[in-house]
Amino acid sequence: MKKKKRASVKKKAPPPSLLRYNSTGAPLAWPPGGRAVEATSQCFALFILTLFPLMMGPNTYVTLTENRFTLFAVTTCLYAGLCLVLLAAERFAGRRTARQGVTLPQVFLLLYAAWALVSAVASPYGGLWLGQSRYEGLFSLLLYATLFWLLSFWGAYTDGYVYGLAIMALLAGFTGAIQTLGATVLYPQDMDYWSTEFLSTAGNQDCVAGLICVALPTLLCGCVLLRDKKRWLGLPGLFFMSYLALYTGVDTAKCAFLVAALLLPCLAESRERLQNLLIALTPLLLGAGLGLAYHSDRTFTPAQGAPLLAAAAAAGLAVYRYRGDSVLLQEAAAFLHGQLGDRAGTNRGYLWKTTVGIIRQRPILGGGPGSFAALFAPYIDQYQAITGRTDIIDFPHNDFLCVAATTGLVGLGLYLLFLISLAVRCLRALGRSPLPLLFLAGLAGYLCYAFFVFSLAIVSPLFWALAGLADKCVRQLTPAEE
Image (tube, rainbow, N blue to C red; front, side):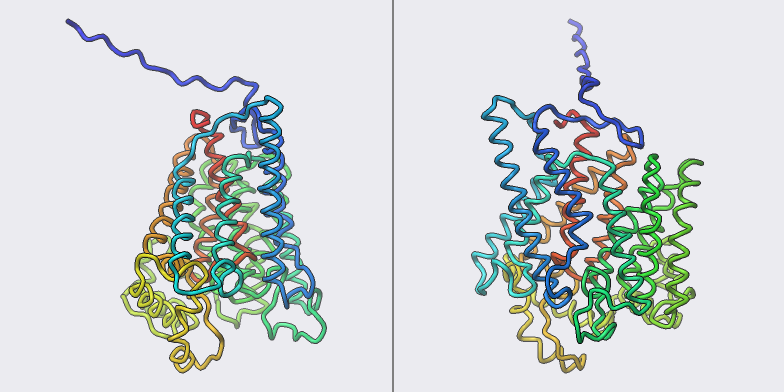
């Protein structure tokens, strides 16, 4: 008997009433029901991307970390509570919200948060709810996970996310720019300008570098990919962010240029995109040129920038073979050769090597979220003797090493699986629409930044908001998941 061929089951396309189009022309599916929660989520995402990085609170820079964490904690808890109330009200009114499947990034992040809780319970150290320093404990981790989960379910895409980030970059960048020209706006009385390295609305220059690494690649993609005329709102932000990146001389901020350089082949696919790209690169390069011209003596010169871009294009080969005078690239080459001096990377060499030893002591559970200050305490005297500094070390200046030290290798593995699964989802969806590239650019910029700094509620909420919005955007591009 001949076997009957199975009829192929075609997936039904969502009806036109459930489709909306953004300025790129890509159709995005909107599930029926839950519109109140969706609107609330969009408003909160806009708040995180636009207003949150600008709000300083009392005493400006003196208590900025506390002010920003308090703002983030209160608003996120209110947002989560309001979502629960709205969902319950819709259910009570008989309006069922559409069921949405759970994605792999959601699963891995949930497992990571659960493991962090186990690590905190098993930790021999106290004070882990808020963390032993800068409020980066179990509570902040749960807030980040909550923000991602809610936005990945209800943060439906709107071009307004890019425009909001553009407004933030313009205002924060303009504030920093006039400060570099001598204005003491936002500085409390009797605080020395520049000696404390405070800048813009993000605190010290390292935190400003975080804003730059998130905003600059995202705005570059927005100016090229979006078709609405409002996309040009990103041009002033590109100018000010690139200016501050090179004026301050913070090496971490230059990661934004590296990510932007890697994006160029993806953004120049057509004549229209190439034209938009050239327009967007004009203020970016102009800002970079002014930053170099005003303070080229800090740590970065065009001669050092050339091998950096060559290294990106050649997948690290140029850095590996580098024999020039740049201290930054000499340290990078030494790292690729398996050598890392204690003073390398502003003393990061000693921190990273010591953190690897700390991880070996508690490889499974780690010390608990927010416990790095206690983990590093036995080494603080040696660190101060080697570096000549008297500051207290509460983070290893590498977010991935910090995750491994505080939640163990299991925690690090789950965190990496979350990042990889989210990246894979976005990359697969690029065949349907270029929209995920907007979020991938900002996420990549932040992760490059986090490799040299650490998670802090001044900047990190932008990363978790973009991650949740990226996951939701992919859902909308693949309606079969809804």
